Structure formats: C-alpha cells, structure tokens
Length: 419
Image: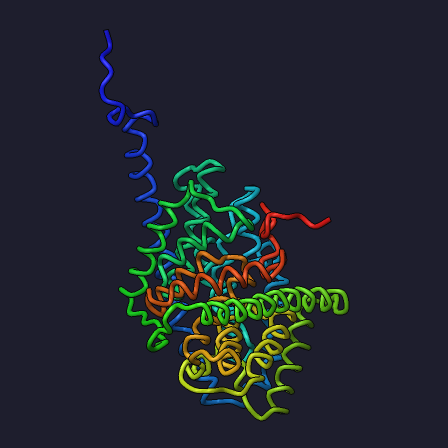
C-alpha cells in the first residue's frame, strides 16, 4: 500500500535526476560558449579601441572610406554571401534550424567592422559581438551532436554571451537573447543557458582586461505624477525615433540594392557620401561609435540636432552595406535626443539622456525588458521605475517594425489587431 504524504511534499514534475542532468549538460555547454564569446569580444573591443584612436589622430583617413567599403563589400561578395544576413541569419536559424552557421562569419564581421571604424563609418559594435558569439557557439553543435531544439538554445546562449560581453551588462544580455526573437514572446526554456553564458562571458571579457564605460545620471528625481507624465511623453518620442530609424535603415538598404546591382559599389558610394558630409560640416562628430558625445549628453546641454546628425550618418553607413551594428548609434541618438528634450520636460539632462540611451534601442529592437535591466546595470537600480516606463512606452509607439527583420511577431503590442 502506498502512503501519501502532505500535499506540499508531493513532486509532480519530472524525475529529480532530469533537472540535475539538464543543469550539468548546459553548465558545460554554456560555459564553453561564454569563454569563446567573451574572448572574441575582448579581442574585438581592443582592436576597436586601437582603430578608433588611430582614426581620431588621422582624420583625413575618412577620404579612404569609399575604398575601404569597396574592399569589404568585395570580400563579402566573394567569401561571405551565405553569412551576409548577420544577426538575422542567427535569428532565422533559431526559428527554423537548417544548417550550422559557417565559422567564417566571425572573422568576416570582425574584420569588416574594424575596417568600418578605422576609416570613419557610423556603425556600432553589438552586431559584431552577437554574430561572433552565435557563430562560435554553433560550432559546438557537431561537437556535442545537438538536435534542433538544443541547437536553438545554443544559438540563443551565443547571442546572450556576445551582447553581455560587449556592453558589460550580463543580465540585460541574457534577457536580450530570450526577448529579441519574437515580439510579444520570450523563450523560457533557454533561460538558464542564456543567463549562465551571459554572466560567464562578461567575466571572461573582464579577465582579459576589458573595461566598460560608465555613465552617471546623478541624483534621482522623486517619483511623482508630473515626472511620470514627462517620462511617458519622452517615451513616445523615443519610440517614434526607434521606429523611424528602423524604417530608414531598411529603406536605405533596399534602395541601394535596387539601384546598385554590384554589391561592393554600394559601400563605395556610401563611403563617398559620408566622407563628403564630414568635409562639409567640418567635423567627425557623427562617425564611429561617438562615445565621447554620449558621455557629454549626461553632463551638459548639446546641440539639439546631434541626434539627427547621428541618425543620418548611421542610416547612410548601414544602408550602404558597412558592417557593425545598430545599437551604439541608437544609444547616441537616444542620449542626445533625451538631452534635447530635458529642458522641455523640466527633467535633468542626465536622467533624460540615460532614459533615451536605453529607450530608443528598446523601441527599435522591440526589447523593453532587456533595456530596462540594462538601464539598471549601467546607471544604478534607482533609475528602474523611470527606465521601465520609458522603455515600455517606446516599445508601444515603435510599431511592429524593428532593426531585425527576422524577428517574428507573436502578439500585437496593444492586444488589438488593426485590420
């Protein structure tokens, strides 16, 4: 006869050995992914710093940007057609696994991004880290003989590890890998591998000596009705900015593909336009990562057109085919837009810059939870309530478009489908 114990002692899940088996398996795999991704990000960040420093001491090198773009375009045409989709390739493989991501994606995107920054394109860095993390992680598919479902989790862990290690935000990186795949849905079956991979990858990067930039938002404004309304108004603007950026970048890329059949000629023409624009305005303020300008947005008022300048240079760079990413330019656009809105909304410059930093990205990438957590990791937990509100409102007002066209749409953002 079987004796039943108290209800709270009953275990109605899988056998106790299954969670331990899952934990052991993914601890090994996710740790390997993290070390690979974190080390690759460290190499990338050191090379990026060197390239940026060299370009800043040789500003005339921007005139070689067209030739550099042509060279990268030719290399991708010759050797990288199967991996040109970049981040979207990884997202597509998670949704519909077909074949292991070619390892050559990692060196191609690494070299292409460094060249882009070396000669003055306005691109970011997250795309490179995420693509390297995903490509390196996927090579373990054969090593561990993983089936499709496990391979999906492996790629998500690679994305989380790459994102976390390049920005120094492990919790946001983990959530980004879970949230970026589909609008309105997160994959909780991969939460442990993504979380562990992100944390270990961040530690691996720091072990190599990586140091991340920190921003101070100063004393927090007490939560009150007027402040909440002001943050919501800013969130609307941030969401519209994210939507416009995504549409402009996709539109520019589609236009170039229609008008210029030969792929290497696209960055050649785009590079020429960027070089002429730098010469015309007499400043390289809108090329590269723009980290000094982002830092200034937290300290004092900036020109109200800075966000527009970065917007235009980045759309031209990405639309013509330069390699890199969208996120750091979106940080720039958001921080400078927040800086411009601060006097209008009667909030501190640093607070609005910090909210714009994360909220424009939240709207453009449709990742409000990851961006809220990123704000707390970068600026401190006190900003959490305002960051959450700004990111969610931005997400609602950015529409169903986004910078990653492979991102699926699971649910309508407002719960109401428009016919």
